[in-house]
Amino acid sequence: MDRAGTVATSAWSAPGRVTLVGDHTDHDGGLSLPFALPLRTVVRARPRADATVRATSAVVPGEPVELSRPVARGEVEGWGAYVAGVVRVLTHSGVEVPGADLRVESAVPPGAGLSSSHALVLAVAGALADLAGATLSREDLVELARRVENDEVGVPSGVLDQLAILSARRDRLVLVDAAEDAPARTSLVACDPVGADLVILVVDTGAPHDLGDGRYAEIRADLDRVRGRLGVGSLRRFADRLGPERALEELADLGVGAREAGRSRHVITENARVAEAVRRCRAGDLAGVGPVMSASHVSMRDDLGNSHPVVDLTVDTLVSAGALGARMSGGGFGGAVVALLARERVGEAESRLTEAYAAAGLAPPGCHRVTPADGAGPVD
Image 1: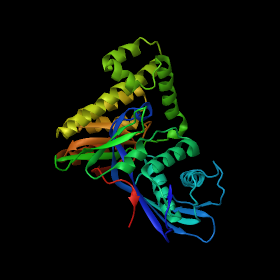
Image 2 (image 1 turned 90 degrees about the vertical axis):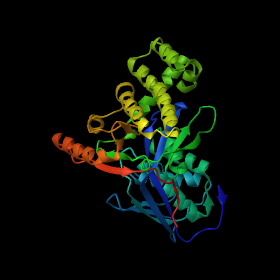
Image 3 (image 1 turned 60 degrees about the vertical axis):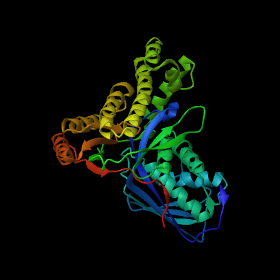
Image 4 (image 1 turned 30 degrees about the vertical axis):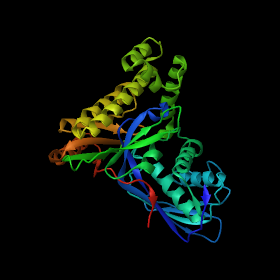
């Protein structure tokens, strides 16, 4: 982290993230294919005369979050815990965080599995670092966000979200390769749904989504046990060495429990689905990614076991309304659904969703027609 001249005010913007294919593969050294949403979080910062960091939110009602240094871990709950985590990690990394007033504005639905927390963390980190006159590299920001989620908030997530948010470009998917024996790498894959007369629809289902409740950690622990039994560093490398079919046969003969076996099967088959989705995109067959998305959701529902009844209702309704494919996105146990539709089918699909939710006694879902957007960075 390099020092530069301090600034009078600063502002950073960071997008939400949705995964087209490839969830729960990054923490196994696997492949994922997310992209940045046009829905963004903006944090504006101005210096204070004292050492307090005071944050207000236009999204979450209530009293401002006020942090007087030193900030103790666990001192703040809710969205303020992420702000406190950023201040702690920046400080421990050698950045002299000044007193500041922060104003948070966001169009990223909180708790929807669209990386609202990572968008908040990266926007706060960028704004505070600029105010402090510190330059953070992409690698700095990726590690900072990981430490905030893992160590400060207690969610054992990987690096997928922050890599996608920082690497994203308009009309591009971000292929994340989190290979176990090297730093995670990203490359861009062209994705122009408008040119293909398609629509990517992101649905905020309203189903509760909380990765800090232990279920996400349970998945990682199950996969760790299987890797230990196999004596491998990652299921991806295991499948690359043997081939997916032989790897699945070896897995079936391992004698682990059904839950561990299913979750391991998801990781192996999901990596193959990401590779197939990339191949189809590069061949100009974006519509062909639809069935890959649907197969991914079946795997999450039946093998990984991290879906939710409202999410399944959403996926089934979209597919019956003519979607080319639909799947849950993110860590799971609720959250958002992403679907690929022909443009002329979108209106009907949204109407069918509203009807299905009403019949189930649910509030209407939030539907967003999106295209891949640019990643995080300073606001002029």
